Length: 324
Image 1 (tube, rainbow, N blue to C red):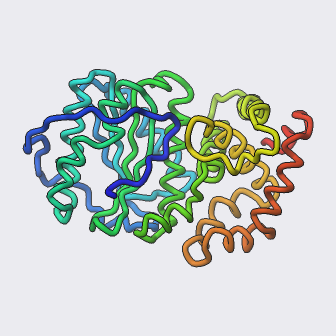
Image 2 (spheres, rainbow, N blue to C red):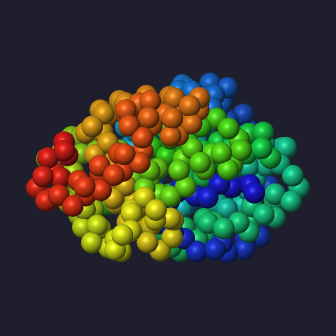
């Protein structure tokens, strides 16, 4: 399997087939020196940006600014590429060809069958142009020599002129931070260390994104509490006896996203932001997920989840007391 499942705010449909020639990307001398950006370590290199032909420079500039803000807050991890899709199908198809050719150029060790796979892969840029959304794909496998983070942005759901576009930018970059702290190339082990259900990784990315946005100049002082109030409404969708942490990716994943966001807020209120963002992830490779949780947060994940279940049904006024 060449790709990890995409971590995304919106689901997209299976890919359309794209026919490409083999000369869509020039092999020039402008490729950044990724030796300055070792996997799992903060580096000094900058990401690359690959916009479709119908994407404006203003839109690219907004993503650059959002990346600067997020990497300043959480560290500069990579190697990292941003692929930015517009709404024109032909332009998206051409970007798909650029993408596949870039993958071949960056990693000549890829097997011959990769080219056909890439051209017809799921979650192609044509799909993003049709359906919107954003996502991170982490390419770090036993089949590939070159490891890289690939963040895809569409131009709708959210649209580039919406506040949520910046929040999505922060959300996807926090996934980069999470994944950069997992060194293994074994896909099953990577999934275990990320936690397979969305409550943990998606809750973390969403809360940290919303928190970071709330701290930016000009953002309304009630922004974060308003957003968290909306997310708490999701508890009404839980079935009798159902735990949000048991809900997988799929049609009801939004419950895991929203209540997971609240869990991370609850956790940070208990242990502090640096303990979650820095200490837990610094220990993740050596200790494993549960042991790092226990070592840094002082209780097992099950105890913390049980405590949170009680908090989940407190009055919203009391819940909002933990939100900055």
